[in-house]
Amino acid sequence: MTSDAVLFYADHPVEFVEDVIGAKPDTEQAKILRSLAANPMTAVRSGHGIGKSAVQAWAIIWFICTRPYPKIPCTAPTQHQLYDILWAEVSKWLRSNPALQREIIWTQERVYMAGAKEEWFAVARTSNTPDALQGFHSESLLFIIDEASGVDDKVFEPVLGALSTEGARLLMCGNPTQLQGFFYDAFHKNRAEYHTIHVDDRNSPRVSQEYIDRIRTMYGEDSDVFRVRVAGDFPKSEKDVFIPLSMVEKSINTDWKEPEKPLSVHIGCDVARFGDDKTVIGYKIDEKIYFHQKIQGQDTVRTAHEIALLGCRLVDKYHLETAIPVKIDDGGVGGGVTDNLRQIKRSDPDRFWWLSIVPVKFGQIIKHKYYHDTTTYMMAVVKKLLQTIDDDGNEKPVELILPDDADLAAQLSTRKYGITEKSKVKIESKKDVKARGQPSPDEADCVLLLCLPVKPSKAHPPKGTGRKE
Image 1 (cartoon, one colour):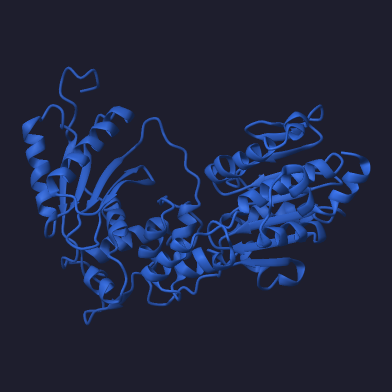
Image 2 (cartoon, one colour; image 1 turned 120 degrees about the horizontal axis):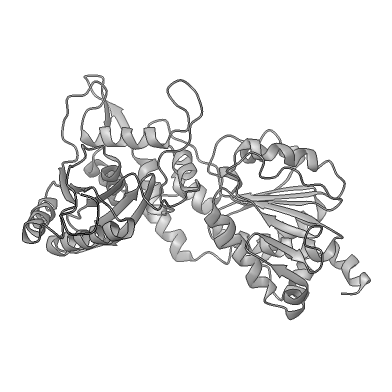
């Protein structure tokens, strides 16, 4: 670009994206880009799927091309969000123009101007350490903070000092999941310091009407999941909800590194009974939960074989030498899955040595000081794992990392509770949930099973498998 073009585009990022990158920002994306050019600090709260990763990628390329020796630190709560989404988006848009691809070098951790790797760059750093954004000095600074609701306040502290430099910029975007913290304050007590933008999915051409209608129909426009994931509003956190959405979203946005040798592996299955209910099979590797299968109308024999095959794959992948607790919703038709798993183990005990079957009945009354039944106890276990403050008031890491699943987030964060006449906590039953017009909490019940603590089995691989005996 000529010097005149650089001067023009420095104040016109929308035109830069259209002319140089070759993309067409929609109305909401254009608002974000124009705010970034005009204001030192821009905060964007939105629902899911509005194209904010594309906007941030365009902003990075625009700033590199229109400022001398810029530094662009970028952060997000998880490696997945930072590298697999934002950094991949930068790579995609650089390829849109041969000149950009020739002049700007992309690597997995750094994007820089050719010949100026240490002075003219954008860099990706996850926010799991307080010093993620420390040590950056330049007359041209741009901080990009993605999924800002999930970034710890300590990470923001060096940003505020750096923003005192004239020409420095901050762009933070995210779903408004937390009712406290730096991102929340940007829209409340510190709002005068920011140019704030609110993007509702219903106003974005990039979000499908099918997605909006599904969340509205299943959970209602007044639910926190609709407010956060569609409307881009902060949650209300109703007083009679047992696990607030903010706690669930914090877990979803927590980084996790897969171990070579996990300390524990669990499998859980919530078995569908009728109608629109789903059979959900999941597994838990240390703190991290995955959904393996969600399906309607599957018979119990097929479900048992799916679980058996999943277990075999996990044994082989992690070279397991101890049994896997397989916790089955044993009420109603779930008993058929339990029976079939027992038959599978009897038919080939050497192959299925790891299969430790644990039947669980939801809603069964228990003798407990605080909790009325098994469902309430399991919900309490999950809540404690999600909490980031221990019983003594000290901060602690999240001990359960949930999958980014809209149905799961809604089911966990809309489950209500009451107090029995014996002064015990009681979570509403699945029947009561459905009576309120909510869908069956199948994904949530699978998570409850996965987190239920059980006594480990002493089973070990049979001799001759090549593993320790």
